[in-house]
Image 1 (tube, rainbow, N blue to C red):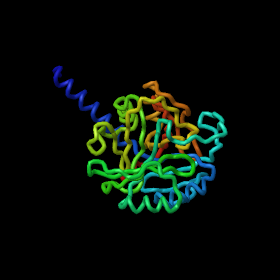
Image 2: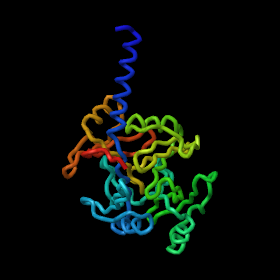
Image 3: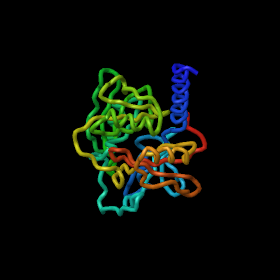
Image 4: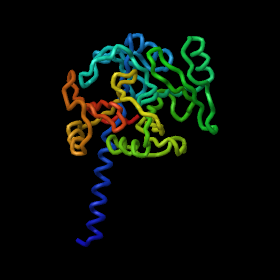
Length: 273
């Protein structure tokens, strides 16, 4: 076999391996904290859409293929760290906010105002591509509310980083997907995971880890979690919790270089939404 042929064979094998990793990962959930988890689930159902329900031991909301789950605010961190006694919001942490998209943002903002929901920023138009504003839930999570008709419902997770290119590359290497620019905005390197976006934005500020904040952690699903965790250990990744059986489901936790806590859940098949 010539050197050129060997090179082509190796390249094909590497591409296939990367495709397998990308195919195995799907976005799974956001785990938030609240003083009243049942009230939080009902609040998100009423104002952000989806269906509130009990998901195992957690109050939660099913929104498309993504779950919103709620911890009591005083629950210890996954590594055993005790709650400080004050629930800090999402701003100031690595995961700055989550986003939802609606068909009529103006009408939605009027609904928020009538309900007394905190308006952080009034809607703006971005080059005719989409409209966006910000509100805050009663427990401190910042929420981007958008009018992006290409994707309505739960829309994105917005991560901050001092080096967004390195950050989005890390997510791609861990969870797969194709790096692109959201709406062709070069300042927002992003990855589409089924029915939602991961969007990364540059910041010069120091960021707090997410654990014990109002957005405690993110979650991705893997078909073969044992294989993936072995891969992460070989990479030297931070694993605050190795694989455990949690009520019949294998889970583990990984921490991004910027400090985002991420739960990895073993799922039967990858979500295609």
